[in-house]
Length: 507
Image 1 (spheres, rainbow, N blue to C red):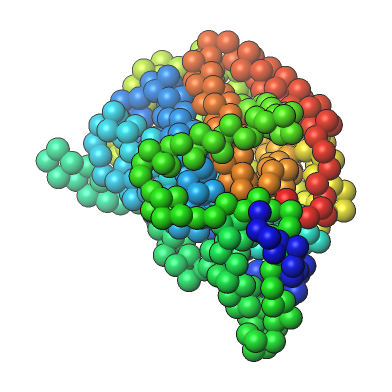
Image 2 (cartoon, rainbow, N blue to C red):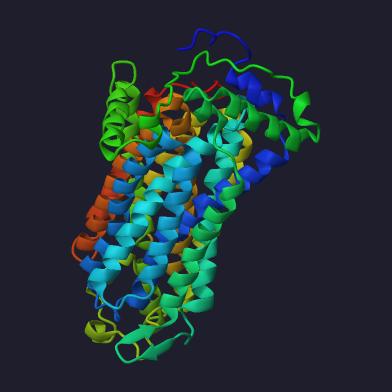
Protein backbone atom coordinates (compact mmCIF):
# COMPACT_ATOMS: atom_id res chain seq x y z
CA UNK A 1 0.00 0.00 0.00
CA UNK A 2 1.06 3.60 -0.53
CA UNK A 3 1.61 6.05 2.32
CA UNK A 4 -0.95 8.39 0.75
CA UNK A 5 -3.56 5.73 0.26
CA UNK A 6 -5.96 7.46 2.63
CA UNK A 7 -5.72 10.82 0.85
CA UNK A 8 -8.26 11.81 -1.76
CA UNK A 9 -11.51 10.13 -2.76
CA UNK A 10 -12.01 6.40 -3.01
CA UNK A 11 -12.80 4.76 -6.34
CA UNK A 12 -16.56 4.40 -5.87
CA UNK A 13 -16.88 8.13 -5.09
CA UNK A 14 -14.68 8.96 -8.08
CA UNK A 15 -16.67 6.81 -10.54
CA UNK A 16 -19.96 8.21 -9.22
CA UNK A 17 -18.68 11.77 -9.71
CA UNK A 18 -18.22 11.14 -13.45
CA UNK A 19 -22.00 10.96 -13.82
CA UNK A 20 -23.85 8.38 -15.83
CA UNK A 21 -24.48 8.99 -19.49
CA UNK A 22 -23.12 8.63 -23.05
CA UNK A 23 -19.81 7.04 -22.02
CA UNK A 24 -21.46 4.19 -20.09
CA UNK A 25 -24.11 3.71 -22.77
CA UNK A 26 -21.46 3.42 -25.48
CA UNK A 27 -19.35 1.14 -23.27
CA UNK A 28 -22.32 -1.14 -22.51
CA UNK A 29 -23.21 -1.33 -26.21
CA UNK A 30 -19.69 -2.38 -27.21
CA UNK A 31 -19.38 -4.80 -24.27
CA UNK A 32 -22.78 -6.19 -25.18
CA UNK A 33 -21.72 -6.90 -28.74
CA UNK A 34 -18.51 -8.51 -27.46
CA UNK A 35 -20.75 -10.84 -25.46
CA UNK A 36 -23.08 -11.34 -28.44
CA UNK A 37 -20.15 -12.27 -30.70
CA UNK A 38 -19.22 -15.03 -28.25
CA UNK A 39 -22.79 -16.34 -28.29
CA UNK A 40 -22.74 -16.34 -32.10
CA UNK A 41 -19.55 -18.39 -32.25
CA UNK A 42 -20.88 -20.96 -29.77
CA UNK A 43 -24.39 -21.45 -31.18
CA UNK A 44 -23.38 -21.35 -34.85
CA UNK A 45 -21.79 -24.80 -34.57
CA UNK A 46 -24.91 -26.46 -33.20
CA UNK A 47 -27.03 -24.79 -35.91
CA UNK A 48 -24.86 -26.01 -38.77
CA UNK A 49 -24.65 -29.63 -37.53
CA UNK A 50 -27.48 -30.94 -39.76
CA UNK A 51 -26.15 -29.00 -42.79
CA UNK A 52 -22.49 -29.96 -42.31
CA UNK A 53 -22.83 -33.59 -41.26
CA UNK A 54 -22.58 -34.91 -44.83
CA UNK A 55 -19.74 -32.67 -45.98
CA UNK A 56 -17.69 -33.55 -42.89
CA UNK A 57 -19.01 -37.16 -42.54
CA UNK A 58 -20.04 -36.72 -38.91
CA UNK A 59 -21.64 -39.27 -36.59
CA UNK A 60 -23.67 -38.29 -33.50
CA UNK A 61 -20.50 -38.76 -31.43
CA UNK A 62 -18.58 -36.45 -33.79
CA UNK A 63 -21.30 -33.83 -33.39
CA UNK A 64 -21.00 -34.07 -29.64
CA UNK A 65 -17.24 -33.57 -29.79
CA UNK A 66 -17.62 -30.69 -32.23
CA UNK A 67 -19.93 -28.94 -29.79
CA UNK A 68 -17.65 -29.86 -26.89
CA UNK A 69 -14.33 -28.85 -28.49
CA UNK A 70 -15.26 -25.17 -28.37
CA UNK A 71 -15.71 -25.49 -24.61
CA UNK A 72 -12.34 -27.20 -24.25
CA UNK A 73 -10.85 -24.19 -26.01
CA UNK A 74 -12.87 -21.84 -23.80
CA UNK A 75 -11.62 -23.65 -20.70
CA UNK A 76 -7.99 -23.18 -21.75
CA UNK A 77 -8.46 -19.66 -23.11
CA UNK A 78 -10.55 -18.44 -20.19
CA UNK A 79 -7.86 -19.30 -17.66
CA UNK A 80 -4.93 -17.98 -19.70
CA UNK A 81 -6.55 -14.75 -20.93
CA UNK A 82 -8.32 -14.12 -17.62
CA UNK A 83 -5.07 -14.27 -15.66
CA UNK A 84 -3.30 -12.12 -18.25
CA UNK A 85 -6.12 -9.58 -17.89
CA UNK A 86 -5.21 -9.16 -14.21
CA UNK A 87 -1.54 -8.72 -15.16
CA UNK A 88 -1.57 -6.61 -18.34
CA UNK A 89 -5.02 -5.01 -18.36
CA UNK A 90 -8.58 -5.85 -19.38
CA UNK A 91 -8.89 -3.88 -22.62
CA UNK A 92 -5.82 -5.00 -24.58
CA UNK A 93 -6.16 -8.67 -23.65
CA UNK A 94 -9.88 -8.58 -24.49
CA UNK A 95 -9.12 -7.16 -27.94
CA UNK A 96 -6.57 -9.90 -28.66
CA UNK A 97 -9.01 -12.63 -27.61
CA UNK A 98 -11.74 -11.21 -29.86
CA UNK A 99 -9.37 -11.10 -32.85
CA UNK A 100 -8.31 -14.72 -32.23
CA UNK A 101 -11.97 -15.74 -32.00
CA UNK A 102 -12.90 -14.01 -35.25
CA UNK A 103 -9.91 -15.08 -37.35
CA UNK A 104 -10.08 -18.75 -36.34
CA UNK A 105 -13.84 -18.80 -36.91
CA UNK A 106 -13.24 -17.33 -40.36
CA UNK A 107 -10.55 -19.91 -41.14
CA UNK A 108 -12.83 -22.79 -40.10
CA UNK A 109 -15.25 -21.89 -42.90
CA UNK A 110 -12.65 -22.76 -45.54
CA UNK A 111 -11.28 -26.11 -44.28
CA UNK A 112 -12.54 -29.28 -45.96
CA UNK A 113 -11.99 -32.08 -43.41
CA UNK A 114 -13.46 -32.80 -40.00
CA UNK A 115 -10.12 -32.96 -38.08
CA UNK A 116 -8.97 -29.56 -39.38
CA UNK A 117 -12.43 -28.10 -38.76
CA UNK A 118 -12.22 -29.38 -35.19
CA UNK A 119 -8.82 -27.71 -34.69
CA UNK A 120 -10.02 -24.28 -35.82
CA UNK A 121 -13.17 -24.51 -33.71
CA UNK A 122 -10.92 -25.28 -30.74
CA UNK A 123 -8.83 -22.16 -31.44
CA UNK A 124 -12.01 -20.11 -31.79
CA UNK A 125 -13.05 -21.44 -28.38
CA UNK A 126 -9.73 -20.25 -26.92
CA UNK A 127 -10.62 -16.73 -28.09
CA UNK A 128 -14.19 -16.92 -26.80
CA UNK A 129 -12.97 -18.23 -23.45
CA UNK A 130 -10.83 -15.16 -22.95
CA UNK A 131 -13.35 -12.55 -23.92
CA UNK A 132 -16.14 -13.77 -21.64
CA UNK A 133 -14.44 -13.21 -18.22
CA UNK A 134 -12.72 -10.05 -19.43
CA UNK A 135 -15.95 -8.41 -20.59
CA UNK A 136 -17.48 -8.74 -17.12
CA UNK A 137 -14.38 -7.56 -15.29
CA UNK A 138 -13.92 -4.62 -17.69
CA UNK A 139 -17.51 -3.35 -17.78
CA UNK A 140 -18.19 -3.80 -14.05
CA UNK A 141 -15.28 -1.54 -13.10
CA UNK A 142 -16.82 1.45 -14.92
CA UNK A 143 -20.14 1.21 -13.03
CA UNK A 144 -21.24 2.88 -9.76
CA UNK A 145 -22.79 0.45 -7.23
CA UNK A 146 -26.35 1.70 -7.84
CA UNK A 147 -26.16 0.99 -11.58
CA UNK A 148 -23.90 -2.06 -11.74
CA UNK A 149 -26.55 -4.77 -11.54
CA UNK A 150 -28.63 -3.25 -14.33
CA UNK A 151 -25.56 -2.60 -16.51
CA UNK A 152 -24.27 -6.16 -16.18
CA UNK A 153 -27.76 -7.52 -16.82
CA UNK A 154 -27.88 -5.55 -20.07
CA UNK A 155 -24.50 -6.99 -21.08
CA UNK A 156 -25.80 -10.46 -20.24
CA UNK A 157 -28.93 -9.81 -22.32
CA UNK A 158 -26.77 -9.40 -25.41
CA UNK A 159 -26.23 -13.16 -25.27
CA UNK A 160 -29.84 -13.38 -26.39
CA UNK A 161 -29.11 -10.77 -29.08
CA UNK A 162 -26.26 -12.97 -30.30
CA UNK A 163 -28.55 -16.01 -30.41
CA UNK A 164 -31.13 -14.06 -32.42
CA UNK A 165 -28.47 -12.74 -34.82
CA UNK A 166 -27.01 -16.19 -35.47
CA UNK A 167 -30.49 -17.65 -36.06
CA UNK A 168 -31.22 -14.88 -38.60
CA UNK A 169 -27.85 -15.45 -40.26
CA UNK A 170 -28.73 -19.15 -40.55
CA UNK A 171 -32.16 -18.48 -42.05
CA UNK A 172 -30.78 -16.22 -44.79
CA UNK A 173 -27.81 -18.44 -45.73
CA UNK A 174 -28.00 -22.16 -44.91
CA UNK A 175 -31.22 -23.11 -46.80
CA UNK A 176 -30.04 -21.48 -50.04
CA UNK A 177 -27.76 -22.59 -52.85
CA UNK A 178 -24.97 -20.03 -52.41
CA UNK A 179 -21.19 -20.29 -52.53
CA UNK A 180 -19.03 -22.06 -55.09
CA UNK A 181 -17.21 -25.29 -55.78
CA UNK A 182 -13.83 -26.13 -57.29
CA UNK A 183 -11.94 -29.43 -57.66
CA UNK A 184 -11.21 -30.57 -54.10
CA UNK A 185 -12.73 -27.45 -52.56
CA UNK A 186 -16.32 -26.66 -51.51
CA UNK A 187 -17.55 -23.33 -50.16
CA UNK A 188 -21.28 -23.82 -49.76
CA UNK A 189 -24.06 -22.19 -47.76
CA UNK A 190 -23.14 -23.37 -44.27
CA UNK A 191 -19.57 -22.18 -44.86
CA UNK A 192 -20.87 -18.77 -45.91
CA UNK A 193 -22.86 -18.82 -42.67
CA UNK A 194 -19.65 -19.44 -40.66
CA UNK A 195 -17.87 -16.59 -42.45
CA UNK A 196 -20.62 -14.12 -41.55
CA UNK A 197 -20.65 -15.36 -37.94
CA UNK A 198 -16.94 -14.51 -37.54
CA UNK A 199 -17.41 -10.82 -38.42
CA UNK A 200 -19.00 -9.46 -35.17
CA UNK A 201 -15.97 -10.43 -33.05
CA UNK A 202 -13.55 -8.75 -35.47
CA UNK A 203 -15.66 -5.59 -35.74
CA UNK A 204 -16.00 -5.33 -31.94
CA UNK A 205 -12.22 -5.68 -31.48
CA UNK A 206 -11.63 -2.81 -33.91
CA UNK A 207 -14.17 -0.52 -32.21
CA UNK A 208 -12.56 -1.20 -28.80
CA UNK A 209 -9.44 0.62 -29.96
CA UNK A 210 -11.23 3.85 -28.99
CA UNK A 211 -12.06 2.72 -25.43
CA UNK A 212 -9.81 3.35 -22.38
CA UNK A 213 -8.33 0.87 -19.95
CA UNK A 214 -10.28 0.28 -16.74
CA UNK A 215 -9.39 3.07 -14.27
CA UNK A 216 -9.89 0.65 -11.38
CA UNK A 217 -7.28 -1.70 -12.88
CA UNK A 218 -4.93 1.27 -13.38
CA UNK A 219 -5.32 2.15 -9.70
CA UNK A 220 -4.37 -1.37 -8.61
CA UNK A 221 -1.16 -0.93 -10.64
CA UNK A 222 -0.48 2.42 -8.90
CA UNK A 223 -1.05 4.35 -12.14
CA UNK A 224 -3.12 7.08 -10.48
CA UNK A 225 -2.51 9.81 -13.05
CA UNK A 226 -3.68 7.58 -15.89
CA UNK A 227 -6.74 6.52 -13.91
CA UNK A 228 -7.59 10.15 -13.18
CA UNK A 229 -7.25 11.03 -16.89
CA UNK A 230 -9.75 8.29 -17.80
CA UNK A 231 -12.20 9.48 -15.14
CA UNK A 232 -11.93 13.09 -16.35
CA UNK A 233 -12.73 12.05 -19.93
CA UNK A 234 -15.70 10.01 -18.71
CA UNK A 235 -16.92 13.05 -16.77
CA UNK A 236 -16.56 15.33 -19.79
CA UNK A 237 -18.40 12.93 -22.11
CA UNK A 238 -21.22 12.39 -19.62
CA UNK A 239 -21.76 16.00 -18.56
CA UNK A 240 -20.50 18.04 -21.52
CA UNK A 241 -18.26 20.05 -19.16
CA UNK A 242 -14.54 20.77 -19.41
CA UNK A 243 -12.06 18.16 -18.15
CA UNK A 244 -10.62 20.46 -15.47
CA UNK A 245 -14.03 20.86 -13.79
CA UNK A 246 -14.04 17.20 -12.68
CA UNK A 247 -14.37 17.59 -8.87
CA UNK A 248 -12.00 14.78 -7.85
CA UNK A 249 -8.36 15.88 -7.85
CA UNK A 250 -6.69 13.06 -5.93
CA UNK A 251 -7.57 9.35 -5.93
CA UNK A 252 -7.26 7.10 -2.92
CA UNK A 253 -6.33 3.41 -3.17
CA UNK A 254 -8.03 2.60 0.15
CA UNK A 255 -9.63 -0.84 -0.02
CA UNK A 256 -7.62 -1.85 -3.10
CA UNK A 257 -4.55 -4.06 -3.19
CA UNK A 258 -1.94 -2.03 -5.08
CA UNK A 259 0.76 -3.86 -7.01
CA UNK A 260 3.31 -1.47 -8.45
CA UNK A 261 4.37 -2.31 -11.97
CA UNK A 262 8.00 -2.81 -12.76
CA UNK A 263 9.51 -3.26 -16.18
CA UNK A 264 9.51 -7.00 -15.58
CA UNK A 265 5.83 -7.23 -14.69
CA UNK A 266 4.76 -4.98 -17.54
CA UNK A 267 6.93 -6.36 -20.33
CA UNK A 268 8.07 -9.44 -18.47
CA UNK A 269 9.20 -12.81 -19.65
CA UNK A 270 6.94 -15.78 -20.24
CA UNK A 271 8.21 -17.29 -16.99
CA UNK A 272 7.26 -14.17 -15.05
CA UNK A 273 3.73 -14.25 -16.48
CA UNK A 274 3.39 -17.93 -15.51
CA UNK A 275 4.53 -17.23 -11.94
CA UNK A 276 2.14 -14.29 -11.58
CA UNK A 277 -0.69 -16.41 -12.97
CA UNK A 278 0.02 -19.10 -10.38
CA UNK A 279 0.13 -16.55 -7.53
CA UNK A 280 -3.19 -15.05 -8.58
CA UNK A 281 -4.81 -18.47 -8.83
CA UNK A 282 -3.41 -19.56 -5.47
CA UNK A 283 -4.82 -16.42 -3.84
CA UNK A 284 -8.36 -17.47 -4.81
CA UNK A 285 -7.99 -20.48 -2.52
CA UNK A 286 -6.71 -18.53 0.48
CA UNK A 287 -8.57 -18.87 3.75
CA UNK A 288 -10.69 -15.75 3.12
CA UNK A 289 -11.82 -16.75 -0.39
CA UNK A 290 -11.79 -20.55 -0.60
CA UNK A 291 -15.44 -20.99 0.42
CA UNK A 292 -16.75 -18.45 -2.09
CA UNK A 293 -14.46 -19.73 -4.85
CA UNK A 294 -15.50 -23.36 -4.28
CA UNK A 295 -19.24 -22.62 -4.27
CA UNK A 296 -18.93 -20.51 -7.44
CA UNK A 297 -16.98 -23.30 -9.16
CA UNK A 298 -19.68 -25.86 -8.36
CA UNK A 299 -22.57 -23.59 -9.40
CA UNK A 300 -20.85 -22.66 -12.68
CA UNK A 301 -20.28 -26.34 -13.43
CA UNK A 302 -23.87 -27.35 -12.74
CA UNK A 303 -25.60 -24.54 -14.65
CA UNK A 304 -23.48 -25.02 -17.76
CA UNK A 305 -23.73 -28.81 -17.71
CA UNK A 306 -27.49 -28.41 -17.59
CA UNK A 307 -27.90 -25.52 -20.00
CA UNK A 308 -25.43 -26.38 -22.75
CA UNK A 309 -25.96 -30.10 -22.42
CA UNK A 310 -29.52 -29.54 -23.57
CA UNK A 311 -29.47 -26.19 -25.39
CA UNK A 312 -26.79 -27.02 -27.97
CA UNK A 313 -28.75 -30.14 -28.90
CA UNK A 314 -32.05 -28.32 -29.41
CA UNK A 315 -31.31 -27.60 -33.11
CA UNK A 316 -30.56 -31.27 -33.75
CA UNK A 317 -33.61 -32.43 -31.78
CA UNK A 318 -35.87 -29.89 -33.51
CA UNK A 319 -34.57 -31.04 -36.90
CA UNK A 320 -35.30 -34.70 -36.11
CA UNK A 321 -38.76 -33.85 -34.85
CA UNK A 322 -39.64 -31.76 -37.92
CA UNK A 323 -38.43 -34.46 -40.32
CA UNK A 324 -40.51 -37.05 -38.47
CA UNK A 325 -43.67 -34.94 -38.53
CA UNK A 326 -43.22 -34.21 -42.23
CA UNK A 327 -43.61 -37.96 -42.78
CA UNK A 328 -46.04 -38.66 -39.92
CA UNK A 329 -48.16 -35.49 -39.52
CA UNK A 330 -50.79 -37.16 -37.30
CA UNK A 331 -48.40 -38.70 -34.78
CA UNK A 332 -47.30 -37.30 -31.41
CA UNK A 333 -43.86 -38.35 -30.15
CA UNK A 334 -41.23 -37.05 -27.75
CA UNK A 335 -37.68 -36.46 -28.92
CA UNK A 336 -36.60 -39.58 -27.04
CA UNK A 337 -39.01 -41.66 -29.13
CA UNK A 338 -36.99 -40.80 -32.24
CA UNK A 339 -33.82 -42.65 -31.28
CA UNK A 340 -34.92 -45.60 -33.42
CA UNK A 341 -36.43 -43.49 -36.19
CA UNK A 342 -34.87 -44.11 -39.63
CA UNK A 343 -37.02 -41.98 -41.91
CA UNK A 344 -38.63 -44.53 -44.27
CA UNK A 345 -35.56 -46.71 -43.89
CA UNK A 346 -33.20 -44.06 -45.21
CA UNK A 347 -31.64 -42.90 -41.98
CA UNK A 348 -28.26 -44.24 -43.02
CA UNK A 349 -28.18 -41.92 -46.04
CA UNK A 350 -30.10 -38.75 -45.31
CA UNK A 351 -27.77 -36.40 -47.17
CA UNK A 352 -29.40 -34.28 -49.81
CA UNK A 353 -27.68 -33.61 -53.07
CA UNK A 354 -27.59 -29.85 -52.47
CA UNK A 355 -25.96 -30.29 -49.06
CA UNK A 356 -28.72 -28.39 -47.22
CA UNK A 357 -29.62 -31.24 -44.90
CA UNK A 358 -31.69 -29.06 -42.59
CA UNK A 359 -35.36 -28.27 -42.22
CA UNK A 360 -36.13 -24.52 -42.49
CA UNK A 361 -38.88 -24.81 -39.89
CA UNK A 362 -36.26 -26.12 -37.46
CA UNK A 363 -34.26 -22.91 -38.01
CA UNK A 364 -37.41 -20.88 -37.34
CA UNK A 365 -37.84 -22.81 -34.09
CA UNK A 366 -34.27 -21.86 -33.13
CA UNK A 367 -35.05 -18.20 -33.86
CA UNK A 368 -38.16 -18.36 -31.66
CA UNK A 369 -36.27 -19.97 -28.77
CA UNK A 370 -33.56 -17.31 -29.15
CA UNK A 371 -36.10 -14.48 -28.77
CA UNK A 372 -37.96 -16.19 -25.90
CA UNK A 373 -35.60 -14.98 -23.10
CA UNK A 374 -36.46 -11.32 -23.83
CA UNK A 375 -38.99 -10.97 -20.94
CA UNK A 376 -36.57 -12.68 -18.55
CA UNK A 377 -33.76 -10.34 -19.61
CA UNK A 378 -35.95 -7.28 -19.15
CA UNK A 379 -37.00 -8.48 -15.70
CA UNK A 380 -33.38 -8.90 -14.59
CA UNK A 381 -32.40 -5.49 -16.00
CA UNK A 382 -35.17 -3.75 -14.06
CA UNK A 383 -35.09 -5.80 -10.86
CA UNK A 384 -31.53 -7.17 -10.44
CA UNK A 385 -30.66 -4.33 -8.07
CA UNK A 386 -34.03 -4.61 -6.29
CA UNK A 387 -34.62 -8.35 -5.79
CA UNK A 388 -30.95 -9.27 -5.67
CA UNK A 389 -28.59 -11.68 -7.41
CA UNK A 390 -29.30 -14.65 -5.15
CA UNK A 391 -33.04 -14.47 -5.77
CA UNK A 392 -32.64 -14.72 -9.53
CA UNK A 393 -29.96 -17.43 -9.32
CA UNK A 394 -31.93 -19.78 -7.06
CA UNK A 395 -35.28 -19.07 -8.72
CA UNK A 396 -33.85 -19.65 -12.18
CA UNK A 397 -31.89 -22.84 -11.61
CA UNK A 398 -34.62 -24.58 -9.61
CA UNK A 399 -37.37 -23.89 -12.16
CA UNK A 400 -35.16 -24.60 -15.19
CA UNK A 401 -34.32 -27.96 -13.63
CA UNK A 402 -38.03 -28.75 -13.42
CA UNK A 403 -38.48 -27.57 -17.02
CA UNK A 404 -35.77 -29.97 -18.19
CA UNK A 405 -37.81 -32.86 -16.79
CA UNK A 406 -40.67 -31.72 -19.01
CA UNK A 407 -38.67 -32.13 -22.24
CA UNK A 408 -38.88 -35.90 -21.73
CA UNK A 409 -42.64 -35.81 -21.19
CA UNK A 410 -44.05 -33.60 -23.98
CA UNK A 411 -45.44 -35.27 -27.10
CA UNK A 412 -45.76 -32.65 -29.83
CA UNK A 413 -43.47 -30.29 -31.72
CA UNK A 414 -45.37 -27.29 -30.35
CA UNK A 415 -45.00 -28.56 -26.79
CA UNK A 416 -41.28 -29.08 -27.34
CA UNK A 417 -40.92 -25.57 -28.72
CA UNK A 418 -42.80 -23.97 -25.82
CA UNK A 419 -40.81 -25.88 -23.23
CA UNK A 420 -37.53 -25.01 -24.96
CA UNK A 421 -38.51 -21.34 -24.79
CA UNK A 422 -39.35 -21.63 -21.10
CA UNK A 423 -36.11 -23.50 -20.38
CA UNK A 424 -34.00 -20.89 -22.18
CA UNK A 425 -35.75 -17.96 -20.49
CA UNK A 426 -35.37 -19.47 -17.02
CA UNK A 427 -31.69 -20.29 -17.50
CA UNK A 428 -31.08 -16.77 -18.78
CA UNK A 429 -32.01 -15.26 -15.42
CA UNK A 430 -29.57 -17.57 -13.66
CA UNK A 431 -26.75 -16.68 -16.03
CA UNK A 432 -27.40 -12.96 -15.60
CA UNK A 433 -27.30 -13.28 -11.81
CA UNK A 434 -24.19 -15.46 -11.91
CA UNK A 435 -22.43 -12.94 -14.17
CA UNK A 436 -23.10 -10.21 -11.60
CA UNK A 437 -21.94 -12.37 -8.69
CA UNK A 438 -18.77 -13.43 -10.49
CA UNK A 439 -17.76 -9.82 -11.05
CA UNK A 440 -18.66 -8.66 -7.53
CA UNK A 441 -17.57 -11.42 -5.14
CA UNK A 442 -13.83 -11.07 -5.74
CA UNK A 443 -11.33 -8.20 -5.23
CA UNK A 444 -10.17 -6.13 -8.21
CA UNK A 445 -6.65 -7.57 -8.43
CA UNK A 446 -8.16 -11.09 -8.65
CA UNK A 447 -11.42 -10.36 -10.49
CA UNK A 448 -10.41 -11.43 -13.98
CA UNK A 449 -8.57 -14.51 -12.69
CA UNK A 450 -11.53 -15.49 -10.50
CA UNK A 451 -13.91 -15.24 -13.44
CA UNK A 452 -11.48 -17.32 -15.50
CA UNK A 453 -11.17 -20.06 -12.88
CA UNK A 454 -14.90 -20.33 -12.18
CA UNK A 455 -15.67 -20.28 -15.90
CA UNK A 456 -13.08 -23.01 -16.44
CA UNK A 457 -15.22 -25.20 -14.21
CA UNK A 458 -18.23 -24.04 -16.22
CA UNK A 459 -16.56 -25.15 -19.46
CA UNK A 460 -15.87 -28.58 -18.00
CA UNK A 461 -19.57 -28.81 -17.21
CA UNK A 462 -20.49 -27.67 -20.73
CA UNK A 463 -18.08 -30.17 -22.30
CA UNK A 464 -19.40 -33.07 -20.24
CA UNK A 465 -22.97 -32.00 -20.94
CA UNK A 466 -22.59 -31.82 -24.73
CA UNK A 467 -20.51 -34.98 -25.00
CA UNK A 468 -22.88 -36.90 -22.69
CA UNK A 469 -25.79 -35.95 -24.93
CA UNK A 470 -23.82 -36.95 -28.03
CA UNK A 471 -23.16 -40.45 -26.67
CA UNK A 472 -26.47 -41.10 -24.95
CA UNK A 473 -29.11 -39.27 -27.01
CA UNK A 474 -29.41 -42.19 -29.43
CA UNK A 475 -29.11 -44.88 -26.75
CA UNK A 476 -30.60 -43.86 -23.38
CA UNK A 477 -32.21 -40.49 -24.02
CA UNK A 478 -33.82 -40.18 -20.59
CA UNK A 479 -30.49 -40.30 -18.75
CA UNK A 480 -28.94 -37.04 -20.06
CA UNK A 481 -32.27 -35.23 -19.58
CA UNK A 482 -32.50 -36.39 -15.98
CA UNK A 483 -28.86 -35.41 -15.37
CA UNK A 484 -29.57 -31.91 -16.67
CA UNK A 485 -32.50 -31.51 -14.28
CA UNK A 486 -30.61 -32.87 -11.26
CA UNK A 487 -27.54 -30.65 -11.78
CA UNK A 488 -29.59 -27.50 -12.25
CA UNK A 489 -31.68 -28.01 -9.11
CA UNK A 490 -28.60 -28.88 -7.01
CA UNK A 491 -26.72 -25.80 -8.22
CA UNK A 492 -29.67 -23.56 -7.48
CA UNK A 493 -29.85 -24.78 -3.89
CA UNK A 494 -26.13 -24.03 -3.41
CA UNK A 495 -26.79 -20.43 -4.40
CA UNK A 496 -28.52 -19.91 -1.05
CA UNK A 497 -25.18 -19.94 0.81
CA UNK A 498 -23.49 -17.21 -1.27
CA UNK A 499 -23.06 -13.73 0.27
CA UNK A 500 -25.17 -10.82 -0.92
CA UNK A 501 -23.44 -8.32 -3.25
CA UNK A 502 -26.39 -6.16 -4.31
CA UNK A 503 -25.51 -2.42 -4.28
CA UNK A 504 -22.25 -3.11 -2.45
CA UNK A 505 -19.04 -1.37 -3.56
CA UNK A 506 -16.46 -3.42 -5.44
CA UNK A 507 -13.41 -4.53 -3.47
